[in-house]
Image 1 (cartoon, one colour):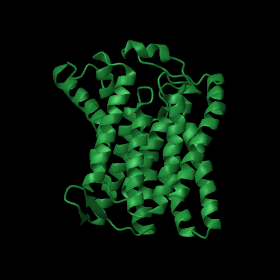
Image 2 (cartoon, rainbow, N blue to C red):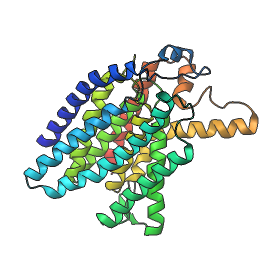
Image 3 (cartoon, rainbow, N blue to C red):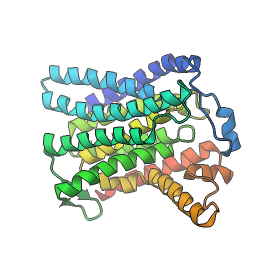
Image 4 (tube, one colour):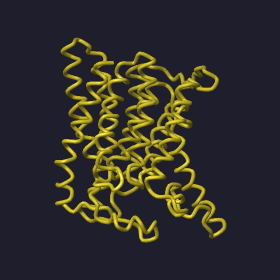
Length: 326
């Protein structure tokens, strides 16, 4: 526990220091947020706020995980150290794809960004590599925990691999859609990762408790600049990174189905977009005032801070419930 606490604090401080360095650079490069004209009017004043701030979390994780890797090897805890790297690679990989998309949109002024087909191909490739590593490299098997029944079911490998890949892609997309209000995605993600980290501690998985602690510290450090009124937004760089982290840990723990409960807020954000599109195609009308869901509540008159607090509290309650039913 001492190592986890130290890593969390170190990551938190590192992220804050990097924030003071990176945000002025983003501002100087004029890497600013582009707001939709048909969105909440209160968002128009955010136009030009530096985005692509997920870089802060990526660099923090690279620095602290690398330092932890060296420290653990010195302590002759080589196995734990080696198991940190694949999770970091998945995280960085997703973050880099998000960075390329943000870079093309905001720096190169290519409004289309990274082609959706290339973006999906990149995410798919990284997902496949990670899942194969879990199944073949670590040989953790294809057992998957059913929370309410409190049993493991053995999924045939030819079903498990596409299922696990789908979990990663769906989680990443859900966290990406949740990013739209100051501090929302980072707050919700920090709570979800904390829940998964606690499960890792309960299971005695040192690599999960350490990696999760580093992620929590990184996100909380970034959150200091992302709370309303945000000084920086994470962009796809950050949201894809966080989606990768959450799915990677959940699969490592063999508990991807738990995400349906503890990540219900991102799940509902995704469903709101799907319902909006399907309903509009069938009726020509909108089911929600605006999708994703957080914008619907904004247009109902909720302030951004209220949406973040309510969604975060709901996530906290769901995570506590998740810990009770496993």
